[in-house]
Image 1 (tube, rainbow, N blue to C red):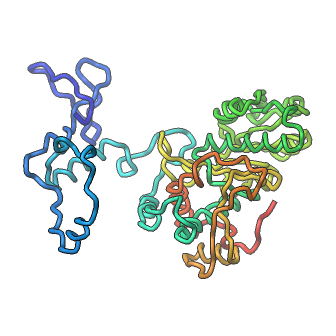
Image 2: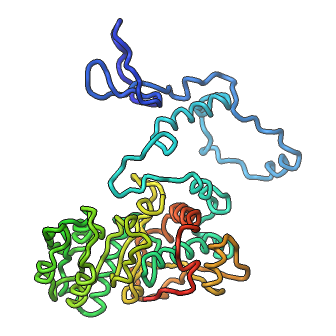
Image 3: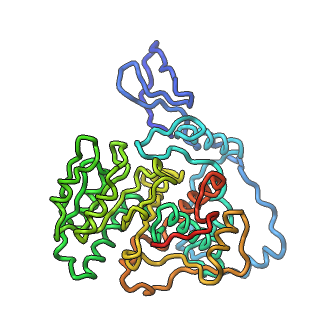
Length: 417
């Protein structure tokens, strides 16, 4: 059965009442939670001879072309026909449509996952993600056939760079947690490049930070030191300064914090971290609250990651594809994962202005960075350039909101730290 099968009720027992509105019942007279069968397998609708699609009779040219093809090897042929359901087109469509309504979706209600997940996946994003020229592109396609995809990745990185105030952005990490991992791998590479890799062994983590922060630091091989909050819920500046020293590699702070409080001492926090020679890392988990009002790069942060599902409306991974781009200051830019999407020929300001207005720019050319361009790069953290489908959805959302956003696409100035 398509849904977990439960024993048939005894004679005279009342049937469970379905209050879900979607055809599934989660209660039973015996108590506990069980699923009632609400949709049989499609094989139950199968009838011999039914056809979903009838292919046209092949032309003489098609027959001739097929005749010139080599025969399939005998050991690759089935000994018996595949056991497949024989159903009509209506049976097929109705079956999968009913199954789709067993999943929660934006059409059916609020998405109650996590305190910092956006819970909003606009359908225009899915429309854009299914455009043939984008959905059928492949990361191994030559650059001449991938100009639209490369332009989109370059534009998204530019948008995120402007939003964060950072010097450069990589779209490669496949999730927010991997963005954290990437940030700390770059932190480690930075300290090693200065001859301090063995010396700096601790990462400071406030007790109000995102839970993945200490886990990520541990994965990279650092020891974590917890910094307590003060009576107002912010970081205890005195305790932070006491903990900072020549052994500190970084401070990982979530701002606003998991308590929902914006750190009003952020300038003093970052200054203290830099004075100790450490890296200031900002977790972008709660970026929604400060989008357009605060930029991590302007505050002096060296690295932050973006959660596209939390701020820019892409679906939450849930074990599937995700995206956690990471932005860095100028001093960490050489260590970003490779490759980056680059504008090779053309004026960046013109390309961004045209894109923001919905126009293409003739004569421009994009390419992926050549391997070895940045010898200090930490290399790849994900195959190719990341999960392109998530990048496409996030960019679609940003473009659809362009009338209410103020960014480098419509401002004359350019941010570079």
